Length: 381
Ligand SMILES: Cc1cc2nc3c(=O)[nH]c(=O)nc-3n(C[C@H](O)[C@H](O)[C@H](O)COP(=O)(O)OP(=O)(O)OC[C@H]3O[C@@H](n4cnc5c(N)ncnc54)[C@H](O)[C@@H]3O)c2cc1C
Image (cartoon, rainbow, N blue to C red; front, side):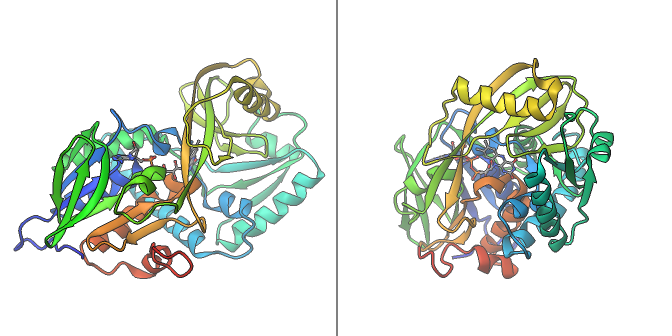
């Protein structure tokens, strides 16, 4: 059941479950469109995957790593979302919200013959997306990023890629949501959803039962645990551990390598990631794993060897069965999913939010809505 935001109707009541990027972003768009929006967040603050993420906006690097030889629908959606990111970066900037927007490209490094072949394949994948990859020899790679190790054989530069600090983006979205009249309530865990008259009832662990015309389920990996939503068993956890280093190493672009990726945040901070641990849903870190990531980063940029670790953390990527996000109507009328964005949720957040907005308001949502509908062929609700 889609709701109408036309001014002649009472303001549609929308409840959003989860205050990560997939919850806050559509919440802000729907509140802007005139809905009464109430976001329910289980934690004292949103500390899920969105908070843990590195913040790379990397459609080509991801397509290359996935071995795509031609652009898939997900790649097209990623490129569309990257274009939206540029507009949003300007909008946040105009609102005085710093999101650490760094449109300085990404450099994939190679240290051996096999790595050089991989760069050529990745370059073809990036070209297939309509981007302009440049394969650089060692000299040019070190000219671009002088902090790279002597042993680098070459690199692939993708100038269109960028990065943000997802924690700052969460803060910016909360401010935007407050400005347009939306409300976030923390410490409220939703346990179940039920039909109620023409709408829905959201049942919380604290005993509250809240009525809504539409509900957006954006609880990340935990969306599958909410009774009545129909997502049980459709999302698998993939844990990722990361760390931050204090360093003045002069790195401008995101650097990606098989051993680690390096995401500069400016102001002497560099984020290093990440492990990929399928089946794990806890947020613990372990010293040996972090040391391995740190060593991997130092092999790429030697100045990081003695850099002090200032923080470490872990998050859980929500992975769907076919690896594509679940965006759209679920079996219960009025219930929409915005989850399952796996390792690209930061990149895909603005485009996913725009899709949810269109679907909830019963506007034309276009071809992406069909591709990522939770009821798509092969993935029954
Ligand atoms: C280590 C790591 C690195 C990553 N790096 C990148 C990257 O560089 N680029 C990129 O594009 N993507 C990256 N990702 C992926 C990206 O972070 C995720 O795809 C995205 O953040 C998922 O957002 P979400 O809002 O669905 O989930 P979350 O951010 O996890 O938000 C879900 C929220 O729902 C709340 N919640 C859960 N259950 C309930 C309930 N029952 N009731 C109420 N609230 C509930 C949770 O507390 C949480 O705050 C990374 C992920 C990880 C873990």
